[in-house]
Amino acid sequence: MTRTDPATTWRVQPAPPLPPSPDDPGAWAYAGMCEIERLDELDTWGWSDLWTPLHVRLPLLRPTPYSRTLVWVAVQGADGDARDVVGYATLSEPLTANEHTAHVAVGVLPEHRGRGIGAALLRAATDQAAVDGRGTLHAYSTHSPEPEPGAGALESPVGSGRVPVEDPGVRFAQAHRFRLEQVERYSVLELGDEHGAGTPELTEHLAAARARAGEEYRTHTWLDEVPDDRLEDVARLYTRMSTDAPMGALDVQENPWDADRVRASLQRAADAGLHQLVTVAEHAPTGRLVAFSVLRVPHPDVPFAFQEDTLVLREHRGRSLGMLVKGVNLERLDAWRPGVRRVHTWNAQENDHMLAINVALGFRQAGVAAAWQRTERGAATPDA
Image (cartoon, rainbow, N blue to C red):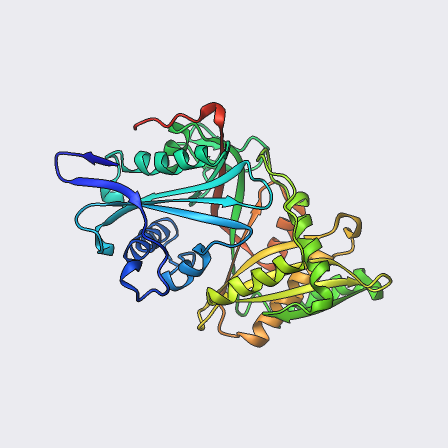
């Protein structure tokens, strides 16, 4: 696809086949995509902790039995130079559940916006989604700070969270018939004298959680592995994450996991240079795992980590297990990687209980992530 403006010619094309390494000449399109992501993260947050560098991105783009991701780039100039990539689009398709859905992401360098590049990239991705029978599309946009209530804010339909009406990402989503379905709070925990391992705050919270859980529950922590005899239980927790976590009005169904998928997830993280620290709570009378919390930590050493999935099975809630597994994981993180100074996390704004745990641990809001959805009823993509 080629479009021309008065200044230059640009075109949207599929990215080359995934290269074997970041140093391969074929990595140019992906390097250009990563640089656009880095600049966007810096512009939104003032830091690049959330940026995915090329050596991490490439393994995460490789297809698995559970998902595949397609990439398009908008290029001006000759192929083969990352500096000529002015925009990108990705289409991620689950392959074992929710096969009616796909996730789409679009990014364009700020100085090239308003020229139809984003719309053309989105059209390339959504046309492929239609061919693949993906009638429900999901997308995310990020914003800082969260706006105050009022005329300048678009409210989440589930009643918690807002995004700025005039933000370019919001305008782009609405112009292309995406509907806001949920807002997640993005929070950061600054570790140090006030928060984290060894502080009176965490010591007190953990003591209270252990007392409430009692001898009926015990914790285990693993780094970069899950024992074979625990794989099925961990898979059950991941499966329940897909049904028990608040999802607003997003059209998603159960996403089953099994032992093989847990192994594959651990290997995929390792291939991408990500450590995984997981603390679980075992129900002693039955020997079953009933809660877990996952931290992902890039290597080599960096000063930040990502708090990812945390879940307590519904039938075991009310025993402070969420605080217990999160708190123990933070203690183990400090013992293993004392140089980590920031932990990033996201939670549905309507998830009052988990947000309360995070606030008690010292997480403070830094912004929001908006979850958007479009169905085949609004599938036409305008040229704007």
